[in-house]
Length: 308
Image 1 (cartoon, one colour):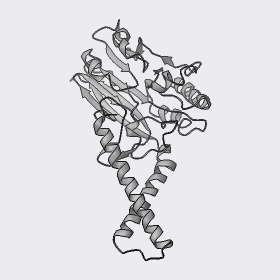
Image 2: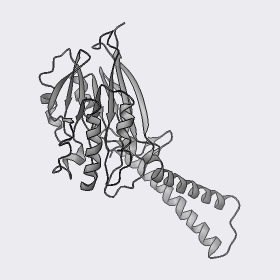
Image 3: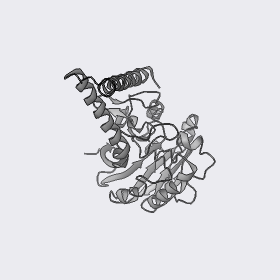
């Protein structure tokens, strides 16, 4: 977590703790000491505390189940003028639990976008019991279009022993690349597991310099290195858009070495497009299972021709 993120989180927590401490004092005064609530400051504190409870309820019961579809258009000189557009469905961070949230809806939502390829940029499950939920979803996705996956930090950490992608039909990439032909256009898709960042050059080895190159990696943290290697499109996740974000300010924290710089959405670094997906699920273990101002995201990226 960067210093700026630390300050933001501390300020946020300080405001929350102060608000509910003051609200507790107001309620104690009213119901224990039997004193009347003052018209202005006490009612303001109670109103803020009530709004906070409503926001938490929304973040727990509603937003984690509100799938949003982000449609993004970019261009490349490597796309022929008469090709149309290459359609890429991008998802990340399902963090599947035993009880499905959006996994059963994802295949239908993605099929409705008619993608040429589907990519998943890591962090599959929160627990062993979530594995069937994830695998059932991925199997359905792989039946829609060629599907390519990389492992995230959760996948290379606690769930490294689980056969996350086995039998799903998805193609795992780790320091490897694959050539795919879409309506006569040859594109190359390369990828790395989250714990294999030093193998970037190996992943891109053998790809013709004039080929359309798509790179998959869980973190957005390799953007500088990837841009130096003339990759056309870099797809990442990990940040969850903060998972808890604030209006205007955005993500409270991203756990990226660049902090909030690439917290979510579309970016451009030299000749490389970067898209950071907010993910589908929520962090497991001891993190609160809430999303606020950072709803689950399916991204449909259309790569069109830059040729006039």
